[in-house]
Amino acid sequence: MKLVREACLWIFRCGAVAVAVVLTAGIAHAAAPAASAADTVAALFADWRAFEIPPSFEGAPDYRAATFERRRGGFAALRARLERLAATATTTDAQVDLALLRAEMNGYDFNLRVVQPWARDPAFYATVRTEQSDTPAHEGPNAHRLVELWAYSFPLTAKDEALLAADLFTIPPFLQQARQNLTGNARDLWITGAGTIQGQIADLEELQTKVAHGGKELQAAVSVALLESLEFLSWLNERAPSKTGPSGIGKENYTWSQQHVHLLPLTWDEEVAILKRELARAHASLKLEEERNRGLPELTPAADDAEYQRRADRAIKKLVGFLGERGLYPMHDWMDAEERQRRGAFVPLEQRNFFAIATHYEPLTLYTHSTHWWDLRRMRDEPHSSPVRRGPALYNIWDGRSEGMATCMEELLLHAGLFDDEPRAREIVWVMLAQRAARGLASLYLQANMFDLAQAKAFQVEWTPRHWMRPDLDLLGFEQQLYLRQPGYGSSYITGKVQLEDLMRERAQALGKDFTLKRWFEEVYSAGIIPVALIRWQLTGKGEEIGALVARE
Image 1 (spheres, one colour):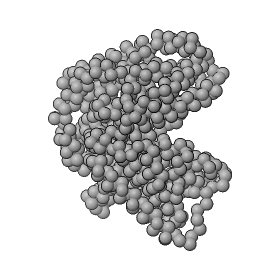
Image 2: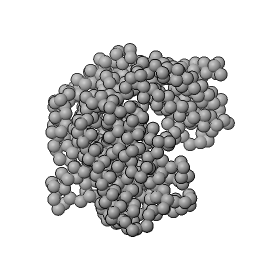
Image 3: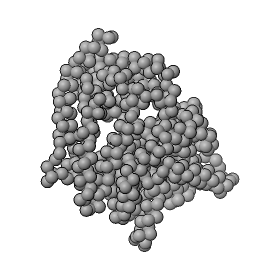
Image 4: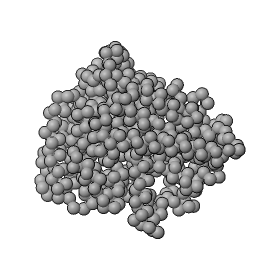
């Protein structure tokens, strides 16, 4: 097996030379000052994104410390170009674009100074993805050149076999590089990262079975990736006892990241206050709802897949019909089909996680959140006129808008009357809000190093109503690991929701009788999937929130 691995690596490294040359050329171009006539926002954006892609080392993205150090000059030149443009930008569109660009550059800087996933987080080196994310990009810190298995259709064509083999051949050199890069002492990140690598091993074993009759190059690529992953897991486990440090980034760093990367004008303490209030409100509202419904029949879960599918079909029709008939939302012909692609399936009782429990009682409650997929379809079919806002922002900067809107939809549609004919389903909406507030609050304490991961998970379990969050299922560990890896993600569901609600208040006040929910949605969507503070600036011309943040950098 070792000979197979070495042969496969040699083949891939020979083929990677051209890729390395192209990437290096792109980086050199990005670092060079552009002519003044061409120094526009779009040109800067293109050069910045080319620079942000790391060079290649032995066929894998290069995250070595010496490489980051060597590239500091190129980054500084891009920042200087940004400041020159910002000093002369006059239109709101350009100012918003430049603020988003600054946030991305701050994200790069913050990763380099503080988060350092390549040095602290073994999960950074798990690059196989079996599912498409429902957000603009995969959640959490992710390496470049992910292996997106979900994007392939099996059985593979000869062309796709070659593409997948090339993707998989990046794994062995990347895991070899990890042994050099991983110098951190963050215990929770290390332990959970080893679990993520174990998950990659399971995914590769499943892939090995699926391509058992494929070409020799693809089979070799899977085999060597699997072997390297197994050896890397052993390496991680051997060193785990020596990892004793905290994994959170601390309150001060957290606040800096939220304000200057995610453009959320809140401190750690202010976020805690907001999430505590939402947790209390959700629990109190649930009790009031239960009192209102006293004497009504309890909801019963779907008994089998046939019943689950009937409920799912009814829920999708009801959601899309309600929005269209009430004129609440900008409608598209594809909305029904997008929901049906992710309708889910029956899960045995003992295997149901929090969200499966909710959907087996009433799928409609979670389908309001899965309007995520409408966001992605709109991003694809109705691209923004600005290239800066056309695709996903880097470093999960979209989290408050994306997760905030999905969470906002749950309660918004409850108040609009979606569940009026099914009062018991209203209770589930409050259960879901309580769960999101509980896990977000736990993540804040985790980042402040007031909790370790075990305490964060216990807090989330304790404050999720009805014992629906179970510690024996994977969801709990996945959520708190993600929120530890990506500071601010756990709280973004609530903070983004609160920002959007406040923007609704502001637009309703400004528009008076001309305000409608449909108009509000159209305005928000027209600005792009960007931080809510930037959407506010775009819609109102009020950029003082962003200006105050820039002044504090």
